[in-house]
Amino acid sequence: MHKNLSLIFKAGLLVGTLDILAAFINFYLKTGKNVILVLQYIASAAFGQEAMNGGIFTTLAGLLFHYLIALAFTVLFALLYPKLWQWFKNIWLIAILYGILIWLLMNLIIVPSTRAPQIPFSWSAGLVNCLILVLCIGLPLAYLFRKNDPANSPKN
Image (cartoon, rainbow, N blue to C red; front, side):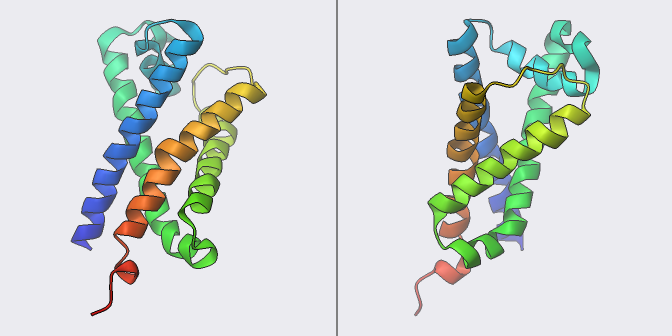
């Protein structure tokens, strides 16, 4: 169990970092604005619109919230992985399905139930964001959990 907790923690840090870097790049390329606004938007889930002007406190709170969410999605993946592998036996398919699941959970349940300002939906932004989740969270998790799956180790 200790190895699994270590894998979950390291994988959570990795996917949290990949995801936030992709979010920063995407935001900057779209708007040309300071990427700190991404972290302040994340913090607005708890603090409302005021977080957008909250300075270092809300920026750091947004970063903390982001990594906690990434860790939660990593724990969820760890719980689902055995069944996902049993059903699909393909890391790309698992990555795509998990990325879509995260996108649906975030956009239909989690963000709407917070104090974050609503962002108007667009298909192009939705597709880009879903692709980021597939590549930055789904694929690394599917790869890491498959690589560390004891059932995948060579037989002696």
